[in-house]
Length: 148
Image 1 (cartoon, rainbow, N blue to C red):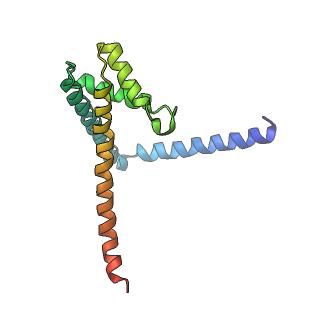
Image 2 (image 1 turned 135 degrees about the vertical axis):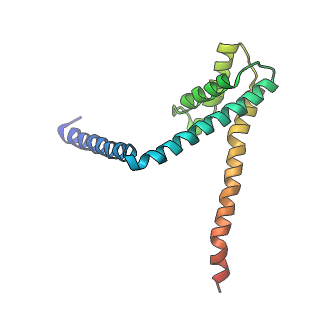
């Protein structure tokens, strides 16, 4: 690696460690705990909503699965999908759900898996896109009216 590159790499790692330490201290400060609690609550709500979406799709496809198992499946798939194997994690989450359902329940249905992905990803993406456009429209409406 060389001494010069080694010192440069060491400096980068130490800077990253310091930044992480500062961020962790700020996050665990007394004043930040309400925000941390809100973020944790929203993460739990998001996991439950994703679990409900998978539960609805799988029960309608004929699999007898409870809500807790469905939510655990979604959380496991999110962890698998975090591995950056492909651009945009395309296919990784779907393969993870299919493999999990096949290995744990002996259930296989690509249609159910794809419907879950559409319900949990594409629908949310479309709704967020519409909300974004509404916010942009509202923010630019006053600006456009003042233009000559």
